[in-house]
Structures are given as structure tokens and as C-alpha cells.
Image (cartoon, rainbow, N blue to C red; front, side, top):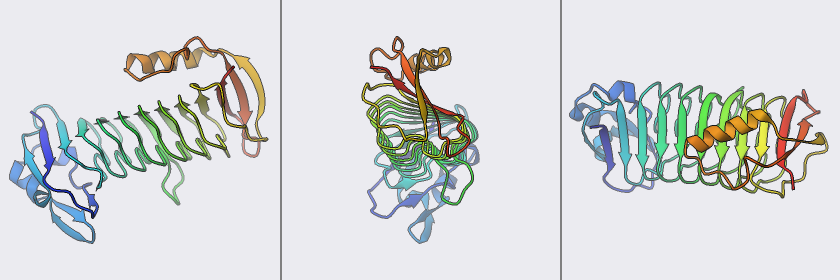
Length: 274
């Protein structure tokens, strides 16, 4: 059975659990995991003050967080292998800087999902906050590899300065998707906010689920109508993964815009043709 960490009581003060890293606790006895210090506000306290711990990840390399973890930050941060499941909501910085493994959230996730991640896969079956796959303030690159699938909606600045990897959002999204994007792929299947692709240098943004795309910035050229083969491959892959695709995506034609010509100008935005 997996290592199961179950919330005992709600707290208004955030808890940072980056010390509960799967490779570190996999071989530890339950009592030792309970004694591991986590950050609670400005104090360090044992994990057992807030969570019950049972099971072991030694056999299946899996850890499960149960209960309301909406104020629990840094779950699966720096994950390198194995699987982490959250049976409920997750707090900020879920899967931040992870390099491998898989994270599955059955509920919603807060801001900074997969911030500066380098590999692995994150699946959020509810909604996500702002800055999915984004760069931290003052950093140079956002996510540089891996995949993030958000079945619901997400906030502003998805893929901010991302360098590589794929982000897919099934619901609506906020403003400035792909801001400063260096490379990679962002696919959105709901209504989108303003200024998509502002400052992007390379990469692909797909606004695939709506016939009412936002107004394009004047620093983009186009459109040219097409049905790109690579996009069809991406959509087939998402479909095989169980991602909820809107009706008609696979058969639709798309308008392609190139930009941002204030930067390198080799990025592309695909909007579903009416």
C-alpha cells in the first residue's frame, strides 16, 4: 500500500511540506515520517502535529495526501520519481521544480502549479490558480520539460517564460497566456483572456475550443488557415490520456498567427476558425 498522509485538522496558517519528499520518506518508518519537521508559519513543527501517517511507499513508490490540503504548500516539490496523489485540494507550488514522476490531484490546485518544473507529469482534475508552469519572479525560465494537464480552468500568465514542455487547460483561462514564452506548447480549450502570446519568442499557443478568440496584439501577423498535422497528434495523445476535448477539435481548421514581432517573432498562435 502507499504511504498515506491524512489531514487531522484545518489550519488557517499555511504549511510547507517540501521536506516530505517521496525519495526521502520512502524507506522511513512511519514514526520517523511523523517526526519530520515542516514549516508552519514562522515555526518548524513535526508533520504528526497536523497529519496522520500510515502505510509505506517502499513497495509501490507512491504517496497519498488525503483531506483538505488547500493550505499545504510545496506538495511533490522537487519530485524525481514515483507517484504523488492528492485526494482533495492542493495548495501553492504543487510539483514545483520537479524533474520526474507523476502528480495527480483529484480536486483543485492553487497558484504556481509546476513552477519551473523540468520533467514529469502533473494532472489536476479540477481548477488551477495563476502562473501554471511559470517562472518565479526574478528567474530566467519557467518550465523546461514535462507536462501539465488541468481539466478545469486556470488563471493568468499560464506558461510565463516557459522553455519546453506542454500545458493543456480544458476550461477557461486568464490573461497573458504564454507571456515571454521562449518555446514549448500551451493548448487551451475554453475562453481566454486578453493579450495571448505577449512577448513570446518561439513556441506554440493553441486557442482550440472557441470560435471567439481574443483580439490579437498588433505585433502578430496573419491569419493563414490550416489544419496542422502536429496539432492533430497532440490532440490524439490528450484524448488517449483521458483529457476532456471539446467537440470538433480534431476536425476543425485553425487560423495561424505569427509573432511577437517585438521579440524574435518565431512564435505561433492557432485560433479555431469560425
